Length: 148
Image (tube, rainbow, N blue to C red; front, top):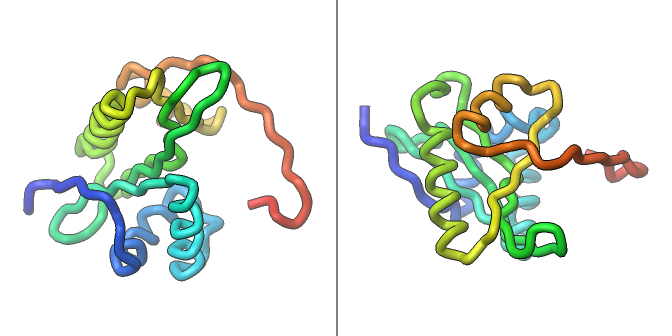
């Protein structure tokens, strides 16, 4: 087994390789080409996708972007954080969060923010162990045909 490597996903080929990993977190994504197209559009909104690679295969992903609001100031928002079922408990999720925290500090962010499902107790325990604390409850409403 090779040593895990973290790198930014930039090529279309790498995006296609990451699709099955992202699909574990976002099962509604059913097509690799659509996934690659969405990420390309999100890139114009400063979305960046990091991957942990082992043996030339992605095993964990973190998608993030920088935002600013009156509540937090400048912050890093983590859209996506997923480790494949096969690779869980390997430290990859913690490694990604540590990497994201370092990047956020370098980019002068006041906070690192992410959301998780209210019923996702395993993820919540993991986040607490990583030093993340709950600070809000998010409310949302699906709107029309564009709800994903």
